[in-house]
Image (cartoon, rainbow, N blue to C red; front, side):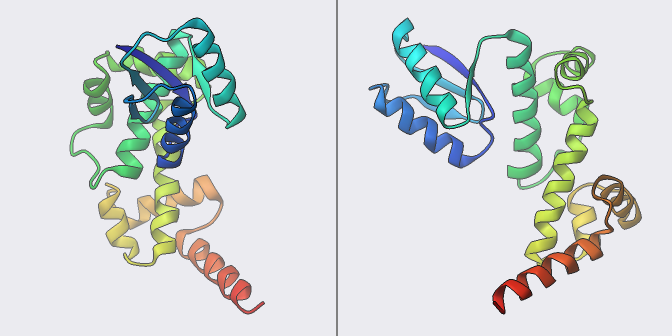
Length: 187
């Protein structure tokens, strides 16, 4: 079994595209997760190079550097946690990430900051803001329900962090998007 690490693989669509590329190279039965692919057979150097080229054409990158691989794993844990989990973990995020990856959090935080130029905490906040934007557009939850779901201590805390990251308060963002949609529908 061989494990490949793929950069920028952050969605279900990416997983489907990787599966297509593997099938083109007659590499069937692989287990595909966000950021990783487990291949049953050993990959020849020529197939590895072909896969690397094919992935680059679709905006993905086969990785070899150990620090970059670890950073991608951290990013994938966070993306999975924020965007695809039914509920955010109850425990501290640092503990959760450390447990998921089996490394000391301080080490993970240092490697992440060195490679990405931002802290893990800021990456989590950025992803939470993206999730909040999505929830605001769905218009199924009130702001206080979103704050609760996203583990903010209050609506004010969510609003302050949202405004700091986007320059807009959540209600203004939501109204701005609704007006754009209405204008688009009237065209």
